[in-house]
Length: 635
Ligand code: X8Z
Ligand code: ZN
Image (cartoon, rainbow, N blue to C red; front, side, top):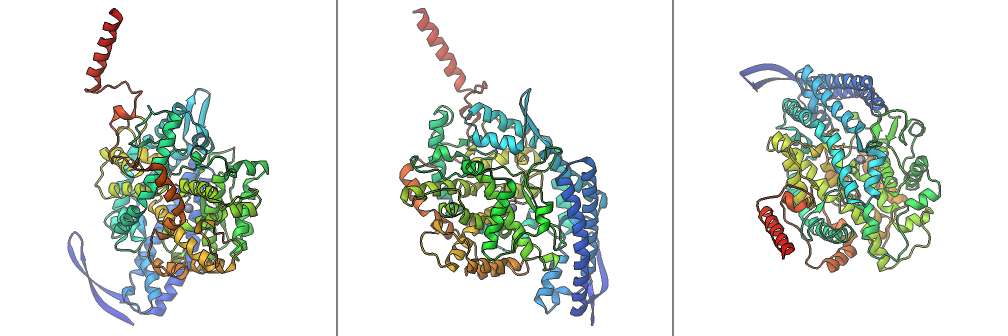
């Protein structure tokens, strides 16, 4: 049956268009099935070209990838156009309505002007290439790429000036080179998204969470968790002042951003040796033991695969082992930032990771394997549903697993530590390690898209890009720029997800909900005892619960998916707070009232004592001091 209708387009001119919208739901199902088959093919071609570029950065591979992304956009446009011929908003079948709502929601592929779309794709790959091929020369004979060298330097060096040179050098060779490109990218992306019916790119990204109160919910969550972060920050600040000298930064302010063991100060686990609460306990960093046992990258992935298998979940297929890139090749440039790949043909799933033999990378291995497990579980869903219940779910799967893997009890089971002690001091040490990974990350995970949303909405124009970035870093993370920053710099793009255009709030969401999932799976496996001791290894009840949710992909609204596992339909911080409760109390005892900082970044002279720029107040003081010493010498 067809229905006569009148569509009124209120664009530049008011035009009435007569049309026949198709109401036949059987025909609609057939259409969706046909589209799905073609979507698998077109996506396969694009992903294959993107894989080739990401594992071998050349001009030719970049161009081939851009060409395939244009084909995919053309296909998406055609599908959206044809789907609009159906009166799908009126379908009785809820699932079919949901499928159609996805088919017409095509993101930047909606860009009407092909040349502009090509430019948009080109800019993105240019930015990626700049980021992934950048090297910092610390001396004439020492030029270092981000992975593994600069990453390792940040993890291991405690030399204030060397860290500073690497910090500044990385920002000079990455972000700084991309500011003009990024401005152009923002304008083009917004233009495309507008054609898809959203206010700006940020609004489009937020729409994936399908939660009208999403932004308020995030504010509430952040406020609930903030006291924990502030206490971890205060304790770390005190220890770092002892290590680097009290003259380096004030006891009541932000911490210079290059001292936290990570290029972006996003996780602080590499400072564990400095911050360990009880030094007399056995180490819980298993890196030395992994090296002693001759661990390889493949072995690390096998350990993770075995965990999923022990839960009765899906093992990695042969193609995974045959085609993944699990170590950094030495004969070509690659995008080293770890990622997981679904080729949309229901058989090819790969990880790309420049794996190093460290505990940190063992955790990233589990993170990536979580993505692959999700791909495997939902591979028979239609293409439009091959995604997480929301993007945060996708990021959470592997992390949920590694919450179990990292317990000392589990590390003992897999032979990476011996003689686990179980007392309060060991508990606090363990929770400190976890907090440096999970709590330290929260403000970083929160602020990146605060910055990006404000750029996409136009609230932050190009001449305020860097200022806004540091306003957020100083306010939320309590870290300060270690050298003067200006609008010549573009520090946000020194972080992978900005040039790569990967939305970031998903990680903040993930870091909250992974604890909700962990608690639910621990309950399902009937483990009593504190949440931070729970290990769901070999528990098929937990495995089935998780698999059942993953199988859904994005076919149901996320609160329903969450309900299936946890009996909850909202994000909340209670599981995370329960997990860290003993450490929270311990930190409060250590810190007393010596916590917190002012929102604003420090003025250049106070944060940079080595700076020769004297301000109006310090100059007269300096002159007085010189005069005084001259007089003293004369006397
Ligand atoms: O980018 C990642 C993963 C790939 S989705 C390695 N993560 C974020 C980051 O590295 O900044 C995982 C946690 C945060
Ligand atoms: Zn991820």
